[in-house]
Every structure is written in C-alpha cells, then in structure tokens.
Amino acid sequence: ILITFFRGADKLRAAVIHSIQIRALPNIGVLLSNGFNSSLILNVLVKETSSSVKAFSYGDINTCISGVEYYKINDSIVEVPAREVIGHVPHEYMGMYLLFKYAASVNTKVLYHGLGLDELFQADGSEDAISALYTRELKILDNLAGMFDIEIRYPFLDKNVIKRLLSVSITTM
Image (cartoon, rainbow, N blue to C red):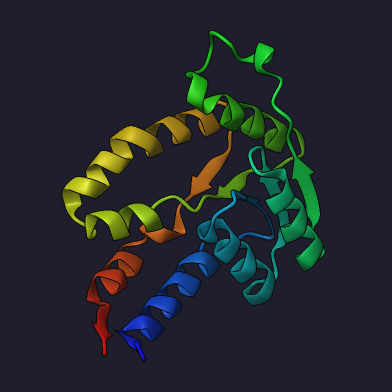
C-alpha cells in the first residue's frame, strides 16, 4: 500500500481560495480550458463568492459545456473564425484574441485565468521561472486583453499562493 501525505496542503488550499475571493467582482468571467486550474477557479467563484460568473472557452468546448451545466451558469462559447485575425495576432493567440473580443462585447471587464499553477510545480516556484512565464505568456495575454479593456487575473500567481506551494512537503510511505 502506497500512502502519500501532503504537509501544508490545507494552508495552500486556503491561500488559493483567498486569492480567488479577494479578486472577485460582482460580474466576472473565467477562461475555461480542459484543465484542473480553470475548473478550480470556477468552483471557488461559484461556491465561495457572490459573483455572477460567465465561462468562456475557445478550445475544449465539451469542458466548457459540462462546467456551465454543472454550475448552472450562463455559458459563452466562442468559435474561432481565423480570417478575422490572420496577420494581426500571433497564430497561437488567435483564439484568445477572439475570446477577449467576445468577452468585451458582453460587458466582461475581468477574466480569471488558470495560468501559473502548472508552471510553478514544474519550476519549483523559482523567480527565474516566474520571470520567464511573465515574459513568455503573461505579457502577451495582458496586451491582447488590454486591447479590449479587459483585465486578466491570475490567482495562482499570488505571492501567498506561491509561498504556500513552496512550503508543501510530500511524504510517501
């Protein structure tokens, strides 16, 4: 029998919930992917805040549909007509560009993004890894969102969450 203990996991959980709660507004959106990070954000927003939540996805439509059905929230699913952005936006960010454009058209000013958690686990939370993440991803996403007066919030990059993540110790018996 293999048993794994995570020391400090309760404090990490509390830090993640707090990081999401303090950034919540009455009307907010979540960028849903097919991953755990965005699902966790959606879960906390629906269960732990009084925010009216919209879910946006351009990738795995089935994930978005199942999430919004489970939480009974209004879904906003974007199909990507590539002709609109070819030549104006780097290829890998076309979907995000259109998603931000659509979110702005339905009066969404703030979107939560799950970026950061996987990257922090892979890089052990080093400052170099966080700087590289900013240069590579956050800057581009923030610039694209800014074109539509949308602010992106990254609750997993909260300093307290990073501190708690680095303090979790894993013991396997």
